Length: 234
Image (cartoon, rainbow, N blue to C red; front, side, top):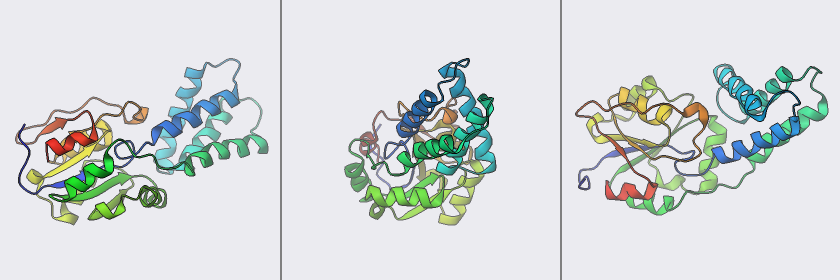
């Protein structure tokens, strides 16, 4: 398609769209499963238990490392007959801490692409999670100066996108949500009347997996293979 000439508002996801994120959680989970070394449950069964605990704790605690750490503790308690000990809790806390101090690894050509897009369009970072954790990651990424506004949401659903439209006076026909998650970035944005661009990531969090919704005209749903491909659209 021809590049869009008119000024647009681009709502851009952070984790696994701008920088690596889920791979570090996956590594922590793999270490936890090895540490647990369960004798009667397979690695796949332990992982399913973690998924269940995470889904429950997101509802109770929200997103972020505290919720993740609690999910590992809950999984340990669920699968082990003996009470969790201080040494176990300390080791689980270390798994979460290793993620917290992980250096931010930008995905290919992200900074150059944002610089290009920012010359012609209004960029708003729209992420979900713990506000302190997400703003700290943005600061460490050194991308913060490239966004006009930053929104850290407790959840990214259609209602949240409607509120963003109101807060920023967005024109839905000139506003796009860009991200890697069908569940949080694409489908709810379409449900709220926005356009969307899907940027797939090979390691998208399993709890974000779902089928992509269809865009109802005049909405558009586009797909690019790399973040840098956005320069061919915008």
